[in-house]
Image 1 (tube, rainbow, N blue to C red):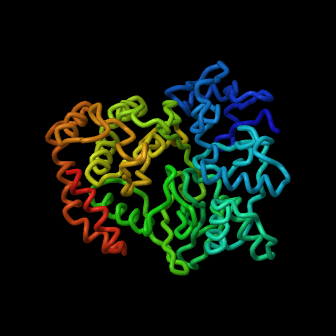
Image 2 (image 1 turned 30 degrees about the vertical axis):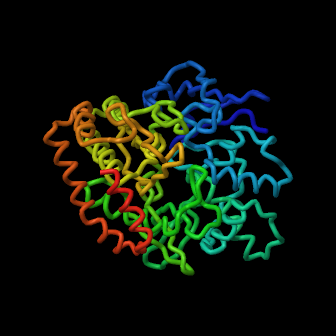
Image 3 (image 1 turned 180 degrees about the vertical axis):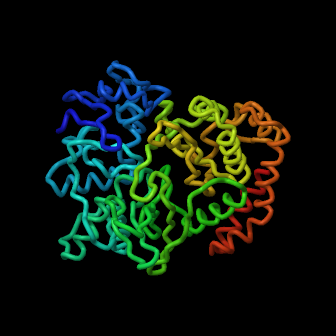
Length: 429
């Protein structure tokens, strides 16, 4: 096991993480030279200080005992399943792998800009084209707990790519980080500088067996449904990076351009949960009004607050109830300026029998279900938005909702899926 590692941001050591043998907690200490920089990389719970930060109450699956600044770099549910398979290949088990090991496995491959030394995961593949078909196959094996068979050299490349690219993107579903060249149609690793002409994307795989979230298997056409929601969100005035569908062997993979990359430059990113140390596994611990207050602390931008409000209204009217604190993020540039990130993971999400999906994860005017128009307006006013502006934003979203059938048709969603979703939306009006 590794007990101590350096934390690097844009080539500069900002601090150290340490985990005592047998301890479930990870401590963090800022580098003395970085303290002098004045750059606040975690300005809510972990301001620049000579203190050694340790938070024993962050011991659950959301943080694995690590401070929020660091916890965002940890592999999530699908990534951990891939790591478990990789460890098995090394003749090791999860018991041999502490939180620092997980960070060093991530190394330079994480979302955002934080990196960890020493690196301890598999080496990044250089120059190889990504085999989407093989990655889907191996993702299904991992989620189905199938014993790995002897692989050919071609199959070994696909498996290695899943190990390298599928552990850092976060979330429970099978996904990977890739680089795409529009002119040549090349698809390469998104973990390296792929060179000129490449943009960096996150791809959510379609057709993976036992894929899903919150203990539920994905519905059919879930990637197409998310694409329909992307089209609606954009027309409702919600800022998102470009999304598209990649067709492959009858499957429809959902792709979204990464907002933590500009060219090959990394952008520092923190989720709302990481900044506030709120556990996303517990519904109702945070409200949209509290999220707006975090925006106010970070940059006092009414534009960002109105953008947050617009997402809240969309989530209520279009029934996206997987609206937890890891689905809101903030970006920091090299000058230390913060802003709300583009929206992501916006899709239909409801299940009356599921603790995480039967109601909204974040509160709206003190409520997480049976939200009325009055609740939306009161919540907006609590954020500092005028009632006139609130009503305009609600109207913008309703215009999109009125044309939902056209958006689903454009995305290629079938009639059966559309009918099921629109029935639930109409019941909740």
